Image (cartoon, rainbow, N blue to C red; front, side):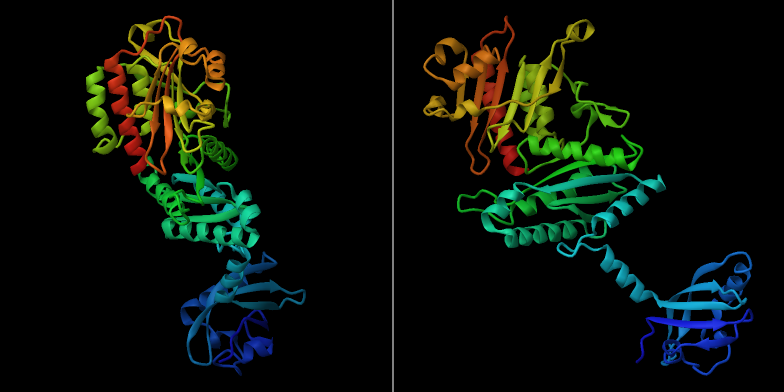
Length: 458
């Protein structure tokens, strides 16, 4: 059967055919008809009358209607209608299915099958312009992608990029759109999801499936992704600020050790000033000291029960309750903490109410790699340093780090479950801070173990 991709017909104002090309004649059911109406669906014929009227004031119009083919089937076409200089009408037909396929090909990234940068950006801007839905913009980056290319070759890198893209499309389904915005950087749009718990289902699904896709002989993931997320209109009111916010959260995900997602939260990451995240504005999270026994008991339900408490929130509560000045969790890469809080000096009513303000903070634990240092941890994975000058006298890097950061007391916990090895470090830096009592050491050991188990299950 002849397929009409394009056809050209010229008519007078009454839509009587003056001329028609072979594409049109070979496709329509009434190829010898003198009027175009012979091949137009009855329900659509009024559109052509309206088009003729419209061309009285406009030089060109575009409309869609159904045309009858040789098999007596009606198919949809787009028609570009132009008023010619002699007063006649030129109608150029385009098969809509062909147009859609061509547009789709133009909008698709050739390697990943995702939308290309222009298409996903246009989609995001249109979603924001509607201003009636929540729009979550997620920027996804494949961790250490340059190293993958350098080690295994660019063909293998392309394979990984396609695999990650396929996972994103599978997890998203019809609930969002995804595109490639450059190199190994991808963008995802999820609409109508305001609750962070619901949003995490998508983010966690992508992170965990990518992590499980390539595992080495020691159980470590070879391919992981980091994701940064911003939400419109909750925190920003335009596309540029939304993209920049998500990009800043991606940076934080990378800086926290990679293989994670970070959803913007002003209480943790700082406030936005004129759409920009002001790094000079300390991101504060208030935590109130509570009964220690209550905290220990609540941590079970908080981490594993219905409360589903976040690990960063629990770390903040631990810091407030046990009077910790700095608290950090190091996950896999010990050079930088993936989450940490630092006590901000408080005066006035907050001090009276025993409320601590805790700033989002990053630290290093590179000193732990000094030969022989890990041998100091006991069978429970704990090393308590109450007298740094004496206990670290024969070390180099640990002694230097404690002196530079004025650390007076430290509780260190070593997570031992492969591949979730890492450390928890709790420091006190105040002049009058006291040694950790044995009861606190017992509590902190228990709480650290709970965090370790939670990290393994999340």
